[in-house]
Image 1 (cartoon, rainbow, N blue to C red):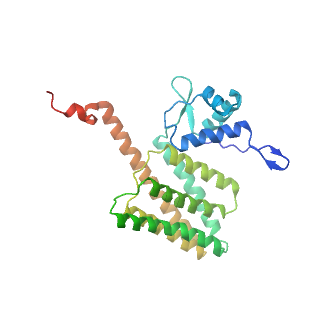
Image 2: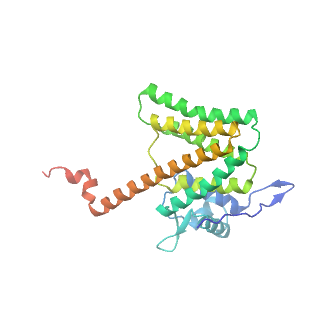
Image 3: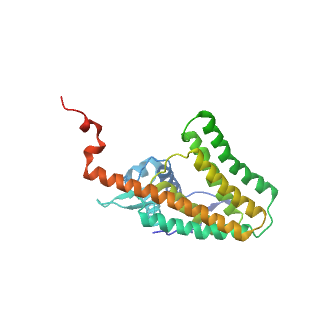
Length: 264
């Protein structure tokens, strides 16, 4: 399911330019990532060709690449649809992410830490406490949409910067695509509350401290624990969604408040 494109981009006058296929690839990926196309939604080759002002061939090539990477799959009617991860897919993706990120953080912890990198990472870690304080001040139970965007930016930024410091572009590419698949296609978790923000802050701080102290074993251990906890949360979200979905199919009246109202 998880094949990754390793082709080179064409160059013009020494500068990289995006081919039509690559522009189509990024466009499709973006409309999936921002929720314009949800899991199970069909995707039209013809419509995309018109939207991007191209022939259907590069659109088809981009869609085939995304299918190879697990973002699209063959629908029941023969066309391409946005994929929905199954439980075993979530497990496999997290196993891959754990193997790669734990190795990467161990490598990073084996080399001296630049003060500028530590400052950037610390800023992203501190953002979790800032968000927690905002929740406690406002009295809200969970992050709102704008706060959630800040949370994801800090979370993804922290992990991405750490991995980039391992100086292995192939590992970085695989991790980025794995995290993207997990985020897009997993059942979306609820917004973070203060207790979760505190826990996430503590894990990120412990990882940062271990790397700064060049404690390789400790950094790898804490990173593994952090990813395993995230995996359990995603699997719990998936199991809850599957139970609710099954009940909705068996007893739809339970989920329709109008069916529960007294008849006049």
